[in-house]
View 1 (tube, rainbow, N blue to C red):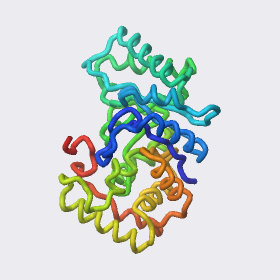
View 2: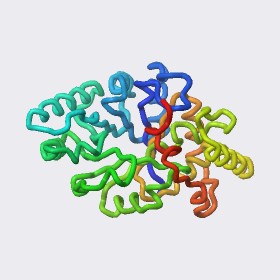
View 3: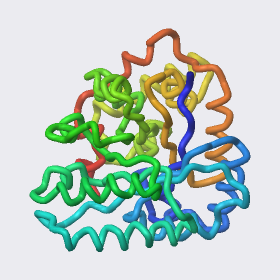
Amino acid sequence: MSPSLCLGTAQFGLSYGITNTNGQVSEVEVAHLLYEANSFGIRYLDTAQSYGNSEEVLGRNLPTGHKFRIGSKLSAQSQFSFSSSDIDVWEKNFHSSCKRLGLNSLDYLLLHSPADLKKKGSDYLIRWLSQLRNRGLVDRIGLSIYTSDDLEGIDLDLLDLVQLPLSLFDQRLLKDGTIYSLNSRGINVHARSLYLQGILLTPPSKLPDWVGAQMRNHHTELETLAQKKNCRLVDLALGFAKVQNDLEAVVVGLCSSKELLDLKIGWEANSPWDYREWENWSLQDPNILDPRRWPT
């Protein structure tokens, strides 16, 4: 069974994405995208306290009677250790998120930084998260991670959901068994960065100047394959995601109605990939795959 679609909303509150040349999406366009996304059947919205004013924009523009399940993320904490006084701050920030979104509860709350569960006093954070779930204020709690190392030293029994990077070029957490392992433990997995912040959909000739020869050549070969298969780059990216049965959802960011239409067409079409052919397109270099290492 194919995963569900989740609309990522960072670009609703920030000028987000290495290939985004239009800046933050206008509120008028957000309202239109949310209406069309709900009609299309996108069932999840993913936001975060650190996504600028994304929560507020969503709260003002959610369609009447929508069927979205909405999750947010607690911002990475700057302090080196936690105490009982931090609980009041987390609680206040959580309720502020709900108020901005116009909701009484969330489908999920993720920690934006897994390192927060490894700090001195992290038991205060764990207890507070568990109480949120017990009080019915969130259905699920979890983490947003970049690598499998982020899960080391964390009690996985605490987690209901993990959001992680996955794309045609970045199959590391698929190949090392992380996604399968989480799924087999009953932890739902949401895959983000499906388009690698738009790089996968960008013609090789228009890639940012800092993209090296390896990535550029690899992407040129992918474009050639798309032409051979008589499909688009977005069809290859989506076709890869559709056959990942261990995912609950795939997070896709959109900036325009055209991108939503491209998503709709690609998601409803048959995958252009032959059996596991997509495995040949994975890369390993973290300087290419990890946005934290890209030039700002």
